[in-house]
Length: 147
Image 1 (cartoon, rainbow, N blue to C red):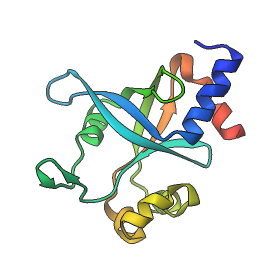
Image 2 (cartoon, rainbow, N blue to C red; image 1 turned 30 degrees about the horizontal axis):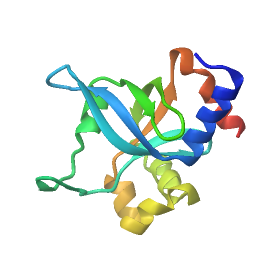
Image 3 (tube, rainbow, N blue to C red; image 1 turned 90 degrees about the vertical axis):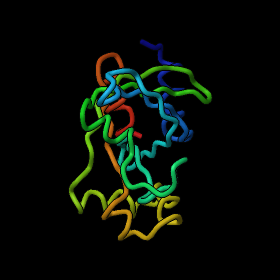
Image 4 (tube, rainbow, N blue to C red; image 1 turned 135 degrees about the horizontal axis):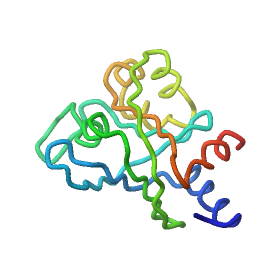
């Protein structure tokens, strides 16, 4: 997939550049759906998160299409697009364990979310999924944990 220098750039991008696209499979349409979103690396793991009751084009909403799509089909593509342009195959798992959710949202790396909403509200209702890279991107699991 990539050479050593490219690998370093990919890890640096994941750690420092939050804005990515995720390409999920539409749960009803079966078509690819691209969503611009932020990732946050906490404890060597990439997470996709949001705030509860975010405003969308139709007003306040709790559900997120991206999360519903990942629940229906966990395999997706995480597309880096800032300093590195690469598609990384991955699988997402929604985080439902309250303690794990609290650890994520209380982590210093996730402070932006707590500035938008209370920690309790985030733990109770913030959309959150952990990412596991697969296939030719599986090397990222160890690379991110090593720091």
